[in-house]
Image (cartoon, rainbow, N blue to C red):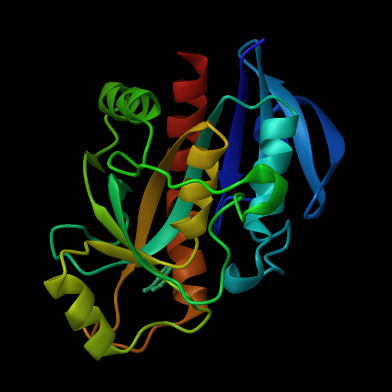
Length: 243
Ligand code: HPA
């Protein structure tokens, strides 16, 4: 049976979209990972809310290596991830979905590899195409069939967080070619590539980034914008899994 995982970001916590849900607890070299598994359209689907089921884990403390290791261990072949993002690109507005295809890595204190020498050795991963073309194509085609508008490309800037950015940082990121900014996609995408899992992310724009937005940002604003779009993200992911 094809095994798929949904890694839900801010606002995507509800496993009830699946049938026959069960709790799973998987041991990894980095700690135990707890998540739900269920079925949808004849496929086995794991559901892992990245921040915990009640948003208790901040971006810089997520156990990215344990999460991806656990997905690999249970046989996941494809991951559809969601992320809430701020936008630096005036064409990508709050409420829009962006199928990111590149990233800029501005994290500071996270390990981004399973290969740290020793028994597992050293690896230098090619990230010319960081996000899996087949899952990206599937998501783009599904969105178009459902009439959900989706930007087909975008460069994701990953910051360390948990604070939001300064307007000066946002101006710098925009000059460097960033379109959206978030705090979690690195190292998640990298580790999925190392684990040879086909991984793609739908970013959901919740706000214009600091300095672009006229008001100071709040987490509440991000959560409310995600809630408004949660039906569309559910529809998109479930229809993609179904097809
Ligand atoms: N910055 C960083 N992460 C985010 C933002 C933002 O503006 N919005 C949602 N996640």
